[in-house]
Image (tube, rainbow, N blue to C red; front, side):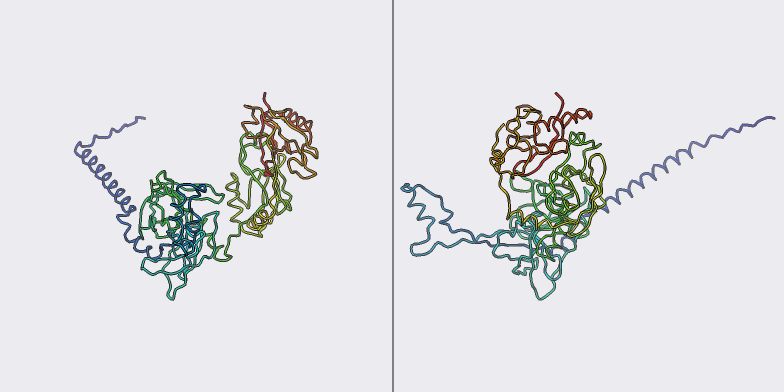
Length: 490
């Protein structure tokens, strides 16, 4: 049977050229639409937004009574040739008492309800005798302090007025993305109502607190902006302007606003209770290093290692020093900072499931959360003092001494305290590099109590026999526990 092959006839060159031109035109149109769409997403002006939110932003002036000028005067040696001059300059006129001075400070804030609740920074109003609030309209009102939270630098004020007040809603900081437009409104350098614009430069910044969750922005923030709002383009507050990073004291484009998700939780508690009520596990914790994870057989360095279990919720639930908290309330725990924030936000009196890693297995515990503030108040009243005079030791790069009554008295330890006192640390040793110091008390090795040098040697030999390169020891310094993984390699 004969097959037939058909050959396609070449198209006319003019048609090919026309199709090519049409394709280029289509690409050009798509490009124009894309550019136009991107321009639609970029505001030509923030004027409408600024006009809408400004009535809810306030300037805050605080007045604080400070010591008299005489109390602040330089102290000169008696008989100094300048003594009379400074007395005349700093003293009140003869026959008049030295009067306390009244200092003023400026900050910003924003109204969150029509009945006059106002959010600002704690450092704006801290120690103030009088708080005065000025609105965009020119209205001025005295404010009362409802409550503060130094841990997040948030404060809540209240003003009373016959009419309802303009206010702004909270937004979801978690929905904000790096690169999103934001505007900061406040009272920079006492210049009155001022608006600056920028983008979100970064999220999840931590400065120094356990509950930090800062938005970083390049919108200009200066002194006086503290406590003011950071808005998204919907006019929602996604941050409370708090701090700047600057070698000069002025804005260099690195400003920080506390996340609205943190601030809102704090404000709700201040409004309801006048103070915060954070959850409390009743443990001391530390991050895991790779060496520590290897020493206990954990595949990766994640979670929060329990260094001490105090009287309270976790002890009642059966948690032990040396446990590694991997999950809390159905969420993974990556590090100590994450755990502290999640426990604090979990509430008081709740039963939560905590998954810990213990002796190679995961163990589920149910913990009824306590209140951190109550524990901290009690701890301040009964704070123990210990004298850990630095001195010397002789295993794993340390000189160690067993406890007796004399050593316990020297270190102000309880009568039944056990462990080994570090008397010396060899310079350049692994123990020195890990920060162990003379005066530290080693109480556990390989997650087992030790009381003698032989105990420590036995734990080290067990770790070597198990093929481990490090020995996990628990030491205490000034009463605070900390795990350290010491190298067993020569």
